[in-house]
Length: 541
Image (cartoon, rainbow, N blue to C red):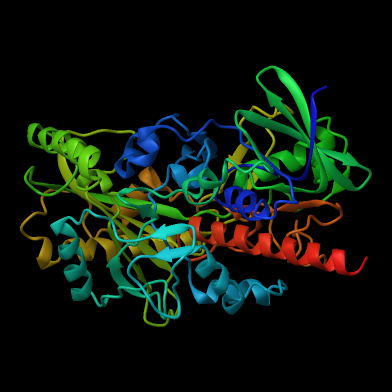
């Protein structure tokens, strides 16, 4: 069997995996192997920001998973796009740069995870960041991840901000700073009019390093174990089975679905459930695949005139898009630099709520079923998402075939509190769009509902709500006393030496915001931990 050997083997070239591969290989005496199930990130649809609209509803560079039928969604299967290429989901997402709320990280620390409070993690957000506009105590320059405002700014964004202000949402240009509450223009992970994925920021500039090996199209099939220690990874390259050994550690960065799947395929998980699938249980960790949390989301859409600065299917819209493609090719400016979601807000559902529990993403186009249902004409849409859901789901094995998609069950609305909060969020969102600033462009709703008819809105939510693309928490971080914890505060898998997990699956609870920036932060923090441990080992010999 073909076998290689490195100091570190990392599974998954997503947001955390790219950071770890780059940072660990900064030391020329350390060797790193990065395994990615997808291919290289060469598609122009990845690098042109507006290309996300074509990737997300398709299987291009996208796992395009589905959930099991959701009782809370009238038995519908939800859609779960995840990146399948270098950069992972940071290569197909909407690029918005959001860290979450201070409260989220202080809560992580309070749950028994020392070193994960907001003050602890802020330096790692800043280490990653090169912010082109914001220069204050919460931001930094010089990091690999470029953060800026989109080069395109639709006039409809100003209408959104004005309408938000009329509904008690003040302008807050730095929602990642002193406070989160308010409305704003989103900052994005872009550079020079192109997407700045984790691959582009961290990995691509370092591919020439002799101590870094990146293997694409490598589907990891199991963790190699010697007793209670991880020693490497077995993976499939085409029809060939190969192995790569890790002298120091194996790190799983395969995401909220991929990391628990690989742990279970390797016999690490709930012993009885594994044995029922014919997998010998090597380590009984009941929390693996449990605790799945995701932002449930509801989209409302209004028609707009064809001459509004929106994406749409019309003669005028096609001509505008064609011109924009040439502008982007020549100048890296114009509509193709748009991430569609140019403005947004964090809001509190009621006066007694002190930490924003709802998020808005304003989209300059028609959004229906993750852009899988296309409509003639133009429109504007808005997502409202529940920030800290109470519902908990699972990610279990469909079979022992590593190429088979896992069984994803978010159990949306399993807790009625999530449904009631989203219903209230839908009402607050609709009130904003029925405000005076939109009077000149707002036409009929794509799915009409009266703001006072809560029963009709409830039906619409059940019929159309779905993920905001932030699955997490399936390998939660926590002390050994927590029966559901999979990794400790240093991201070491409980009961297995030489094995860590670093991606959104280790979140103890879902943060109030998008998950890409926090996942990059996790990669930065773990790389520093590993450097410190290496120094400690060398000085104690």
